[in-house]
Length: 456
Image (cartoon, rainbow, N blue to C red; front, top):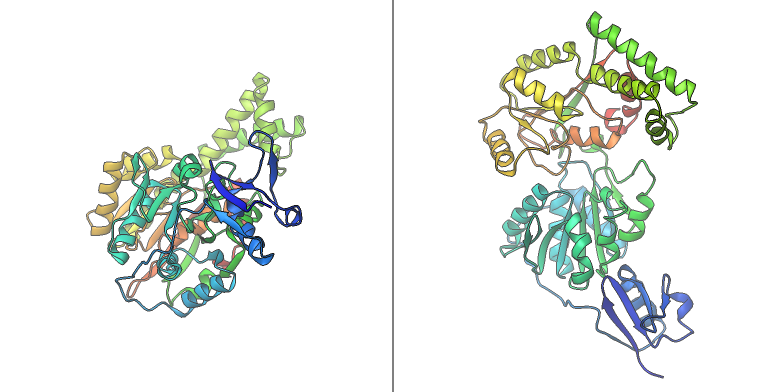
């Protein structure tokens, strides 16, 4: 019988001359009538090769286009005990898996140590261009060699490369067989309908996921664990607070609206809730929001209800009293480095205009964004206002105070915002303020959010 052959084609594996005896052991393998070969997703490469070896089936492999690559860490830094535990757990999990650690706990350093140990060409996936350049700088510093960049208009592929998820989805079908080690930073993004193909189209046998909060509201973390490996190590914020992370406090301030805004809020809320009741829409269900959007577009009453929904949100998120509290807290923390978070860009720019503060959103141009971040780090600016642009992937260790003016109900978002101020510094005491409009939907959102262990 002809020797079994494994090849790589556009993010899939091509298998020829597969014995019938082994076929039941090879999941996701399908017959392709066009090429008269079997095909399987590229990420199944390791399992397939392991099965062939276990059954002593000879094969030729033209899929893998990488060999052992020596990476030497130029910086001798001793890992903390929990970092060593995380590394050991990853090895014990067959060099696959997700490591869950709070922001500021040194996930990148763990990845660097594992790159040096694994000795394979490595592709690091990140969600943003900022984070891509941040990783590139750290890798250059530790390994002393040129680092490839694939994203944001750059297409430089090297044995050590950093790419955005978006670029990886587009190009992994072409280079998915060039890397033996795949790292997925902020890996909770990976199970998205598109981003998951960055992992599916890669044959990398060794995989590492990094996240402070791998669980997802939609439950798709099971897909993450299938593509990268199960969560093999986890440490909580409270466990590391005061040790490798700064000590911190969370203070919730319930703010009264001014009378006029309260009246406007209650009127808008009544209009919105009355429409939900009339149309029998439950916003607590997975389809509630889509059903509200559809129904509200069908009539004048519906459009009025949608506008009322926006009005009550705007008033609770950015009341006059909240803005006055922002100023009080700025005065209270003169000399500190403060990050002010909002749910939307409009509120961020209103605060920036009112208090003459730099504002950083996803609309901020790259040059200005870099100038603001560098200015915050060197002390030129002591305050930055942002909507969601600093939720993840930006290192601002100088920050020690966070003011959340408004936000979503996402636990992940608030844990990420807390993480922005937890980088350890000598004598640092971090504090996070949450401004909540009294007697509004924000109170329920805050109560749900505070069930997370970081708030206990």
